[in-house]
Length: 506
Image (cartoon, rainbow, N blue to C red):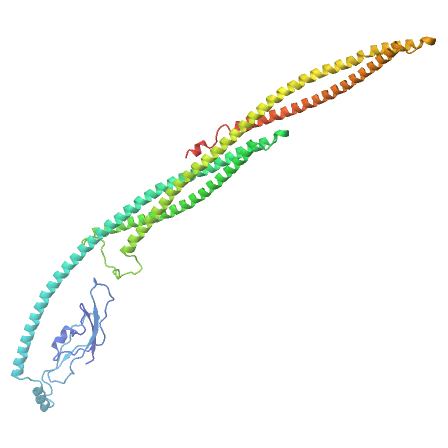
């Protein structure tokens, strides 16, 4: 009879098994002989919730068919659509008809003795008792193991919950620490930002003060004559501009430092914010995990999730990272606070220097204006005197001219007398005392006229000198009035109020 191969499904893993191919096989004279063809199939691990299925193909080979006189052919039940051949069951007594010797030999070798039969039964009884006792011990051990493992699982779950609670406490502590440090850092950064704004305003205000000082210098360049001098006021203005430039450079350097410190504060703030968000997310996850139990929804198997990942941090590095972030923030915050204190002190110093320079320049301009006013008053007084002297000199020049004109008639009288005495006759035309006196009179008048002309020349020369002096005094007075207007009206006028008073009140 041909071989029949049949596939059998096992619900538990068994390396060997003998399975009847069909209910009809129970009528076969001899037991079927199993032949293992393939190994069972193992489902990939880990899938502890899936049953392990094993497939094994066996070949059932019945005993060789024998010719019998009364062979019984009983076809098996064949399902619809399944083509199978019926099994033939041979007679237990074989070969009697053909060869009686063969039948006797078969009967001799297929029978057992009663002793063997008794021993076999005792062996079966003992084996049954042994297996039953062993099975009972196994069941008790199974119960004990299951109880121990249930207790161990419960204890482990309880310990995991406790550890999760501790982890939540630690994470909450560091979250609060980082959040508090973040708030302090944000407050410090806001103060430093306000300091930067004040610093920028100070730089702009100093630029305005420099512009005022330069305008004063430009205005003073419009002085004329001797007033265009390198006086104390001009020196004070130049020194004031130098002080302003140095203060502005220092303020710009501080502004750059503030910018760098704000960048560092922003970097530390970013780390703190990232750490706070990470810890809040971790707290949400840990709280969810802490609330899970055996009856929670959404629990499931995840293959390989319990394997250790060497790339993740441990609790030591986790705490060190949070501590490092907090310490960096504290360091940057301390630097920022120290910088604000240094900036405040330096700005007070610079403000005091600027104020002193501003005051010194104002005082120098005021003193110069006072000196200029005094000189102007003196020039006006001298100009008045020169004007009066010119008036007097002009009167005396007229008097000198009149005096010269007055000498004309006496000269004419003397000349006429001398000319008339030349008409004397004979011996009367002598050089008598009268003649000598007339000649002497003429010479005296001529000398007087020459003296008067010399005095007139001197008077006219002095008159011209007085006119020149008056012109110089008027020019100088105009220059003094112009310089006084520049110093007192333009320079001091634009410097009446200190433009950065609100800034230096730091």
